[in-house]
Image 1: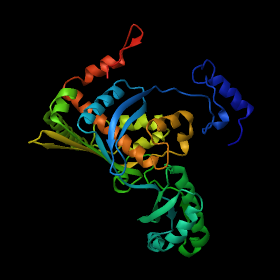
Image 2: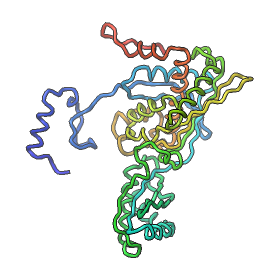
Image 3: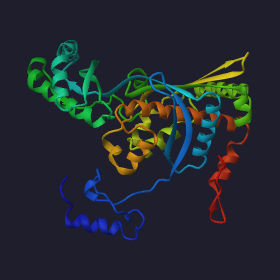
Image 4: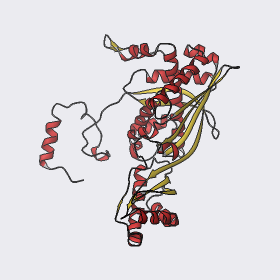
Length: 386
């Protein structure tokens, strides 16, 4: 990026006239990874938990989660959901597949040439893998899938990226593959143009692609709420919670809803910001499927919350800043293997919020909670007793 001209500097000064809070900081601007840096917007950070989390591969843990949000009631509600889950044995987390996708495009004169190239692509996986992995010590090409659309071939590439989220990593690796194709195959296959991404990877957009092809980490969190925990902590029965959740599922179907959950995006956004994730990737992760199952005999309500794609990382990008590093440390995710752990913990806290939000609607206290916690009286904020 070229240094700013004197005219640009003057324009900056004019824009920033009277701006006081954004520009007040003591950070070294040369260590900031954005352009035209002017300062910080401070987002309040609260702590939710503790949440008892079980996994098949590690000892049980009590986890707290930092949440950066300007919305009142979210953290208080999540804490109540944690309390109800803890009283029922906690939340169990399972981690599935992982991958980070990028999808370059190769254009041809006609569909025939495109189809010929698409059929040949699987034979090039070995050189593609060598080229891609030469760009990074973390990126590993795990699959390639060609999709022919008219006279273009969209090549969906999936990588593993270690503990990094990997969006930039796979972009660089994919660009090297694109260069290799142009040097080695352009004339033979009559390629007329290429792009490093043609939108089929659905980067930072909600889509069915994230349900069928993992972009990030696949994870599911589940718990079995007892009748006593629901009555004592949530103020309603497990049957009432189940009936409400089934009702909202029917409405979601009528509404053409993307996924099936109550408010998981609240937790995604809050923890993403607090731990240095790419906030725009909340769009990728927002598809989540809440499944309620009720046992009439025991009055137990089993709840599972499935995220097919959660793009997170614990190294690189925004995770390198000091406050975000502390956020990861609070969640016990600032160590090797922390990426998969972080995805699971986010899913668990999202499930805790689903539990509490549903009970607030059932007990007719949802509006009152927001009214009470979001207002100011005599200059002091009313706070919930957790």
